[in-house]
Image (cartoon, rainbow, N blue to C red; front, side, top):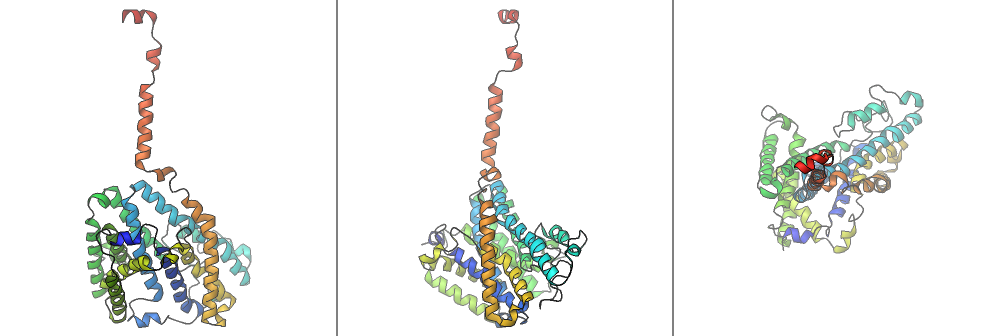
Length: 395
């Protein structure tokens, strides 16, 4: 059986794994946000990955696979429209919640006047929206909210959303490939891109961060290389999933290899390949009863978006003083509740438009335009109707 057959479209546990990864980010962030310092998982991996970092790598691995599959079955207009609907409505909602619900509530609770919060200047809520609406984060905090009332320094309203701009960047690369027909007629380009990222990652790890900037300014940011690598490993597997075997021996070997490389080094290069296969293997191998999780209602994005928001609120309320476990459990509960509201209130409603307008694709609109042009050409013109009687006889 091939990996493509084993994953079976929507008959897999990718939804469950995304939820697990979102929850893992909350478990990891609980240490700095609750005032317990650096999470211990980072030390177990020779400072290669935190638990939250590993979860984000898992997100990008799954995303690379799914987004490449989407690119193989749609044109560039459909592709970008659907990606926009999945990312931006939920993201803009969490920005609004932070700026106009959480921010002013905490500001007033800290003893400040509400009128002083609602300003148009730098550092205010409007600046927060303006600086962040494109996914590129230009402002993490609002005024002095949380600055002296929570353990985490800097007063970030939402410190999890910084990774989204890198995911969107990967989407744009796929969009270019879709536009030029690469996803259907030149699949080899995708593994070549993954190979380029692999070489860049090795160079970035051997040299100092940003060493590639003189040659490739775009890759002066090591996170762009790191996330790009695992995304395009997932995309490469998607391109050749019908030829890649689904095998328990490979699955177990990839899991053991991932753990060994996490512990002793090499995970952020070769380990990404093993880990991506292992994640997809688990998605196909886990019990069928788990496949229902996230199949119709995908709360993982919302849990990721709201986890930090809820944890900061809990720290402000002093819940972190109850201990790590109560703090994490309440954070999970709050994040899932807000994710439920986000999904049913905004995200799911936005996705209902995926086949509307641009979602119908280039061929649909091209055919409509051609049909209208032909219909117009077939209609008699004013000159043909207004003919003098004598002209008809002479003609």
